[in-house]
Amino acid sequence: MKRLTAGILLVGLTLAMPLVSCSDGSRPTERSSPAASPTTSPIAGSGVGTVVRFSTGSASLDVTIAEDNPATRDFLSMLPLTLTMEEFAGREKIADLPRTLHHEGSPGSDPEDGDLIYFVPWGNLGFYYDASGIGFSDQTIHVGRYNATREELAQFEGQDVRVEVSR
Image (tube, rainbow, N blue to C red; front, side, top):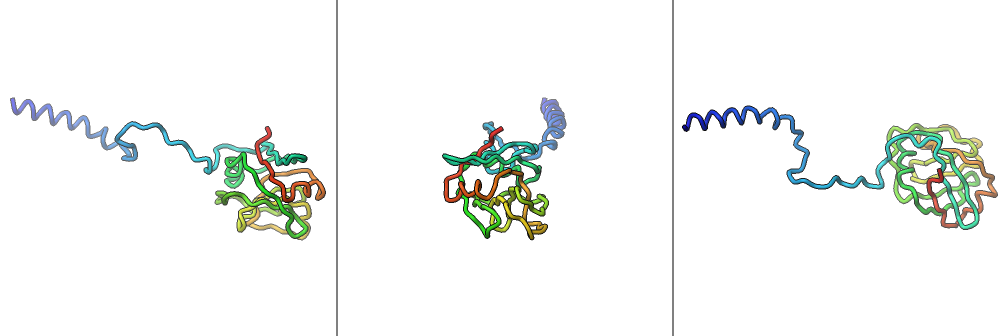
C-alpha cells in the first residue's frame, strides 16, 4: 500500500511540475481585483487629430494634436486639468504642468508660430506666436497646432484655463 501511495504521489508531482515551472511568479497568491491604472501614466494609442480645448470664462482656443509621441500621449492622459498661462520673452505664452511628462523617445523639434510645444527642462507647455530665430532643439517637443493671434492668446494670461479633450 505504501508503494502504491508513493507511486501516485510521484505521478502527481511529475504532472504538476510543468505547471509550476510555467508560472512567472508575479501573480499574487490571493485573488484580487485588477489594480486601477494611474491617471498619470501615458495613454495607449495615437492621439493625432484629437482636439484639445483651452478655455476661460470668455475665450477658448482649440489645439489639434499633431504628434504621436510619449510626451503627447502623457499630456492627453492628464486631461482634464486647469492651468495658468503667462507671457514669456515676447515669443510665447507658457503654462506650467502639474508634473513633468514622460518624454523619453519623443523627438525634438524646430518650432514655428502656431505650435504648442512641451519644453523638457522646465516641464511646461508653450504656445509660440513668434518663433523667429528659434531653431531645432531636442528639448522642445512638438505637441500640436493652433490658430490664434498674440492678442487672442493674451486673453488667457493670468486666468484659470481649463484644458480638456473637445473631440
